[in-house]
Length: 164
Ligand code: CO
Image 1 (cartoon, protein in one colour):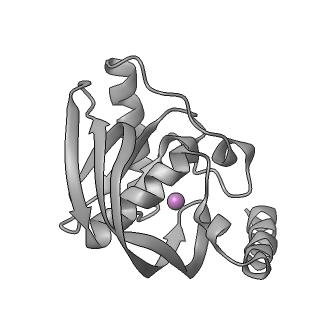
Image 2 (cartoon, helix red, strand yellow):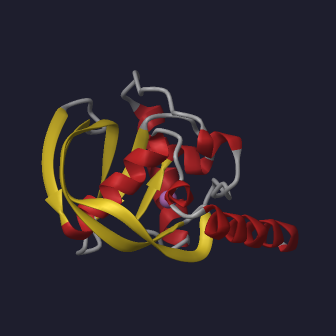
């Protein structure tokens, strides 16, 4: 069993912008290991630290081939093209909806050692990057949906939490 449970929306920690990571070392490494375990258990392709209740600007991003990497203190430098993609979230289990995103993004982030990296991405990778960085800004994908749909998801999550 993973050491950390995934926080289910709605929850304050998911709706609060996370704090920048300033310490790179064993504690950060340990958090990454724990987040990976939680992501794997839930069969996810990305996870943000606030989804395990830790308000830090850190997320894991899964690639198409099943490998993954961490993004620390990420920023989106460029965005272009518009797409709508079917999206879901580990914090809103089993709910999926078409969500507007950019087709391509260029991001800057630090790795676990603190080194800055730059990455241009499109397709699924661009999608996951936008979803996870948005988590770190305190925004869950349901924000993009209609109030009606969001209300429906809210009701379903209430039931989900009550049977858990
Ligand atoms: Co999510």
